[in-house]
Length: 102
Image (cartoon, rainbow, N blue to C red; front, side, top):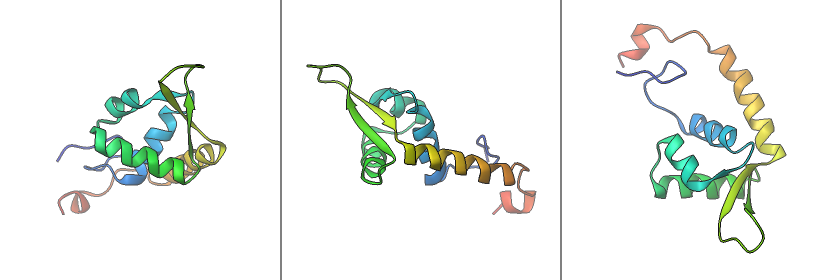
């Protein structure tokens, strides 16, 4: 079973959310986030809409008179990322093999 960056085999939705919010801290286009997160277009749309509804992400027009939008992490989203990283530090040790085989 292949491991991800946290030592587990599959990403959970919280890990995906943290990755999206981290990517959007400086602003990012939807397609860039989609490819970097390895999600399809339906999945990324659902995550982005969810994060916007929660107030963790903002959709901003790239330039005046532009049809392109970028997504930026809000203050609430930055708080989530910080707390997620604090929690991840508690679990920095890889899980025991008995858990990995389940």
